[in-house]
Length: 250
Image (cartoon, rainbow, N blue to C red):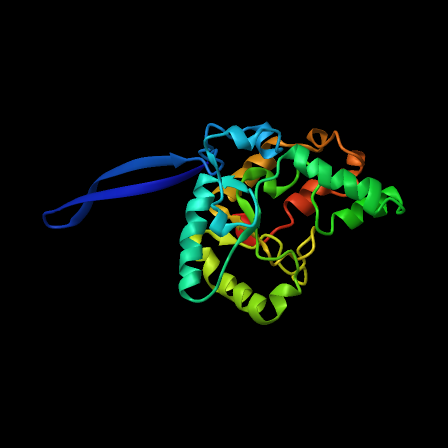
């Protein structure tokens, strides 16, 4: 707890200056005040265990802005539409190629890589390989409807010509619309997933969801998929869920 003291001094002067009264008002506030979480936010939400396709607060991205049927939160789409319009005026085209994925969707991705793509690796090496670019179910930011992938799932694409122009525009302008790149370069010591130049997060909501996640989710909530028992050994919450751009930890 902290206290702010506001002093009022009252003096009356006759022949000599004298302090006759001192009034003190104490204002108290708690530095650990709980954020004003929205009513819909709960453990199942941040773990991706819900059906976003039947919720009123999720919408389908218009076809002219996507390459398939993609859902995101309404607030995210509204912000993206404004950003895309600004980018288009500057001859930069942005399309959403991936949006919300719930627990079951992420589980299919994870289990395929576990049982097929990297099946010849030992369990720990297998998990580490998958975690270069794919999240364990219940730990993905894509569960929340706040995170989107844009234009290409290739860092190389964003390093040359048209892709480089798009990325440079996003770096300069995306934050003006609330979007930040979660998985930036790891040269500054960031832990977790490799850099993803295509992945952008709507910070006004995702920072709130991450705060809720850290206060309510434990390693025991991460289960029901192949290899889940390695989550603790891999420090999945501290190194991966929280291994993001510092702007998204505020």
